Length: 580
Image (tube, rainbow, N blue to C red):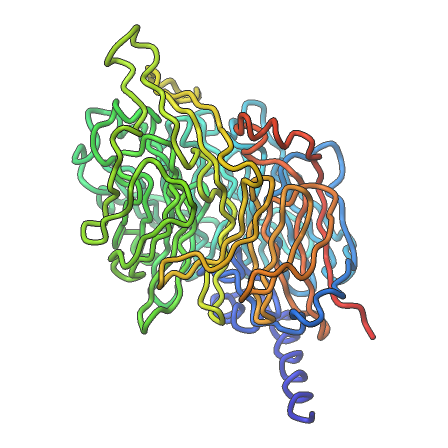
């Protein structure tokens, strides 16, 4: 009993010391190991979304009760996909329309609010969402729908610096949570449906000064920048026209719209890249690097160390932006990725070597599998949408019914990994689409698709399913089905619990080993955001943002009609065990 008391006292003391300090790289690296605070998107820069806290467990989670709730207010609802951060007793949470709130993490009292002034003419493809912020020093940093990066004082909300990422009138926007790596703030760009050029940027987190840029479309030059802002060439990404025909690479997409992860053990940042532009694959013969890939970048140099392409010559809008989550497997540092194309991949985190690849959804029609020797998909040619120029009036190619739909086996909703169970917990969806190609030409600021589509259901009883996936054995261990498509992320804890939300409004918890649902709470609107947990004053808290929206009601076709009864919202919910 005395040893347990001392252990608890030490943990509380460490948490108190940590909370009083300005956030630095040491704290960011140590934070996932103690669980006292949430300092980064992913609960750690490697994105595992695992907490070592176990005060809350399968034996007592039924007692979990709400402590406070906070409304984002106003008429600005829409999708709420934000993961909160918690530091120094404050919660920092972003909201739709590029807003950021600072709240008292214990009581929910609003401390300050920043509302970014958005211009007319912004062009976010998939709702006016924001997925979270980053902390460094005494700054809280987040990106905006008009493609700017904003740093605010954590205590006052005052603007410390603001930098333009790119031109929103050309289709650029930014919705991802930045990540911190070695004192740099790393960001991507959104806008793949408008023919932007994807890239990763690194800035000095304290000042916003640009350090390097790395394009994610073959043929574009990377740069480093001196303290005066002068650019120096840092090598072309890939080889011009090696995998792209003509000039299409100049508007090639491959947007890095979900952000990235960073592993201090490898010194590499991992960014997933989106679809090549346009969607019509017959216009761009070749693999179209570095679209639909994982790109590993040395954060010190801004150069690509390795890449792995999940869907070469993508013809289905299978953005490869899904997070690359590093973990240890058999004495090796590896990474797992549940790709939008329906396959789960395990790659060596240092070299990119493919180690395993297997389906995590049950219906895939575009490929029969992944060749582990070559790393390439085994394409099923009949399931590629047809070339509109090959017959008829040239206005519409042969349609195909393909699975998964372009919204993916997994989309923006982040998965979790537990080192206790050695399982990933993947929010998956089973759906299909009818898709066809159309002629298209690039015009600045206009949609650049060259395709039409309709989303369709596959099963009568469910679309979504939370699945426990064994990355070594390559199999699904258990699943919890859900009627509506899952669109929120997952949290795993040392208390043998997995938390996730549903569009029907529930925050749920299941036994991490068996999948048995052991707790649920109705939040009042759809949950399309990832939960978090932290410890404060010796008590474990759980929180999630609630507010239905995102891509499904905008792009979902028949599925959107099926779930049109769901209501919008905008709330932060916080829970803990009642005091005895």
